[in-house]
Image (tube, rainbow, N blue to C red):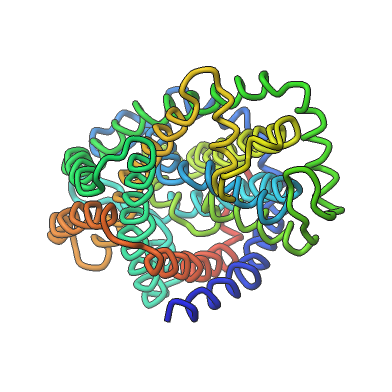
Length: 435
């Protein structure tokens, strides 16, 4: 069963999903007249008050919606995933990961615009949205909406909960040798403490924690780039060269073909920022901003996630391999970032482990909200408490049980989620306004 699941995921994520999302990213980049050029305006909008939308105690500000999205997307993919892509696809994989992030910003704008356009308000004023509401009220395809909501719920319990708890347990166990049962209990208690307060509690947590974690990690990367500064120009040159002309193994790099470079680079970019999967639009709909404004603000999640953080991680890894090839001995493909962080003058590996734990905790919180909205769409608001209980239990179980099969199932679910979301984007493309 596991072998068959792996084969299916390999087929999906190296063929149909990559081609479909790549084409959609390019289509919306052109159709929306390159919204990426408005990146710095969008960043400014995310941190300035929206005079057109009054404060709403039931919903999120534009920045809080962005922080919630980043909480769910920033994590092990930016740290472990990038080093794995470089190890398996060569340094050129980073270039294609970066390009995927740039083009994916347009798709993120499109899906968040539509989510805000078709969002619904409950009697208490709380906003609801996401691909399930786009599919139901925009396309009038209730069956596809139910499929997407079901996948969102399952993905939340899988990739958003158990796998993140497992990452926390692995990092803490490897660095400080703490029992996974203790780690699981602490993760479950912490998660429960945040999520019982609802969307405002989740938003407040993300606003306070995510920017700090992001800039802390970026700061560590900048220190490492300074330490390896003599190799940084060569690293950038090698990344650009190997993007189009992968070659035989040398130094600390394995050999690769253009196909593997494209596959691992593009797949890592798509999987990390989730543009085209549609989850970001669930948080976007909870904001009070207009569709155009929130679309621009939410678009910057892809910028920070892939264009900035994945790129910095990759350059740090490649520069370290060029300057200190012996330093990667004994590290796995996913451990190349750890090898680079060991160069920090003070507790580098411990700092990276803490970063992994903190990012995984924020992912736990962010994905809980996505799953909550899927539950509410399928079963109604009265089932949210039961969902929260299951989520907290799964956070504990994820820390103590093997998760190979869970990873495989959640990869498949994420692949399935792409198709109804992309169908809605393509069929409703004329309703999306150019920013």
